[in-house]
Length: 84
Image (cartoon, rainbow, N blue to C red; front, side, top):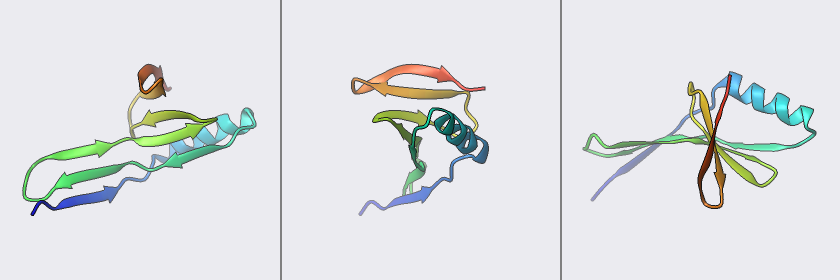
């Protein structure tokens, strides 16, 4: 039997603070769903699931310590936004 191991990753604090500040400025509420690491037991296969950020029914994907945030539009990765 295949065993899947899931470990949640906390979002980077500076990224979280930037999102909160931007949403406060725009008078909007965001929902942040932490990403995770998924491993298949007894193998070296690993998948890193990105953090999901939902702002006004729009989904954004972000990884800790990355310079890009991805915008999901029309069920595909539509655009890449650089964060500074």
